[in-house]
Every structure is written in structure tokens, then in C-alpha cells.
Image (tube, rainbow, N blue to C red; front, top):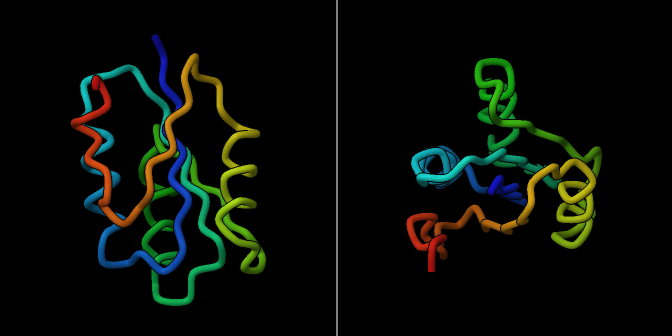
Length: 100
């Protein structure tokens, strides 16, 4: 089973690196798709560096703030997994709970 984990984000500079690490550490075959909805707090810079350095993580950037729904639709277009999971970037849900 291959998972697609879509992470929509907006102004999540304090949590984005931690959530990406947690998703990577989840014990599943997965792809990670991050959609930044035109963050203004430095999140975009973090993700630009990550996109250049980390091929398993795919990052897409909106040219203006369009809302969470639009970020999800953008992410869903690029999913190739058997199952799609939406993972909010604010650490509300722990990727370790995916099996449940």
C-alpha cells in the first residue's frame, strides 16, 4: 500500500519542519506533497530549501493566498498513492496514528 500525504500549509514556520520529519518517520511507503498557500512568515523559504534538498518531498507554491480548500485541490492533483491522507501542518494530528 502506497500513501499520499498532502500537507496544506499557511504561515507554519514554527511547525513545518517538525511535521515533515514526523511524516517521514511514519513506517509506510509514502509520498509527501506539500502545498504552501502563499505564506508570509518564512515558511516559503524553509520549503524552498527543502524542495531543493529533498527529492521524496514535493512542494508546490500558490502565487496568492487561495485558502485551504484550494491548497488541498492542488495537492490532490499530484497524488499517486492508493490512499490519500491530509496532514495539517499545525501538529494537531500525529502521523504515528496513521495505522489507526
